[in-house]
Length: 383
Image: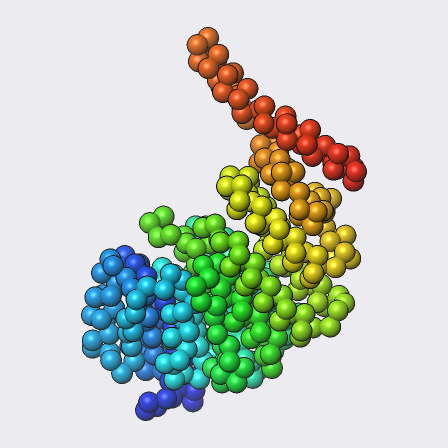
């Protein structure tokens, strides 16, 4: 796809400001930066704003070296570590000059035609937000919004609510008009306080689903915040703010429930998987208490009734504050699949494994007894 000369900007005008929060990503930054410089829209139409969040691995020096010959289009900001990407992204927004903003992470990279296709979709449809197809590399990526391209839809017709990461194109004038900023000092879902109101306030939203625009990469040597356990107080406080925005903008009914369904399944129930039972007691109790408050305040029973029986049981236990029962349930579900028996084990090994199994199964038996009454109430088969 070759650039349209009529859409190329001359002089100091910038079409897209690409904002990158950087922390200790020296091994992966070159691939990310090169993918931006190689964009088919032309690097003369872009600017990179890289905010170094107190890196200690050489990322700071690497950024300076890349920016040196391109100082008119490559800007580096150095700051003390803030602990999360929200602050660096906000700093990038304040410095940006582009008609559009795009947010990239330093361990990911873009498809060569990504920004050209997304800008074209925005200008064809007067779209304030454009979702470009996200391709997972060694990790999951959202699929629902990218099943088909959409020209000028909204948050409902695009199913955009199922993709709330920052890796999208936003019209900068819209973000400035509404004062949109990322949550700071929040290490998970900090994008939602920016992305959700952008979806709700956008004149239109477009989707580029026929081209892999953004490659979301799993790096074994690079810690992803999505794999870390969030602080319950900060996580649910941030989530409450996002839920309030949705409820303030959308009237009660099927449309609001279609949005709430996403947070119920991913942010609420998603906290109560196999990892929950491994948390310290105080962390488990905090998750149950804070999730229960949100569940009772924001999620109508009509929405919960649409869930499968096992998820409805989770909601019942969360709403009732049954931390021990939830722990027991997550233990049961995590160990519901039978393990294959080893072959040709000697007597000593078999005895040792039997003793280990007994130590392991005793708490599961206790857990089964603890939650049996809840399974019996709704007819769900106990694992």
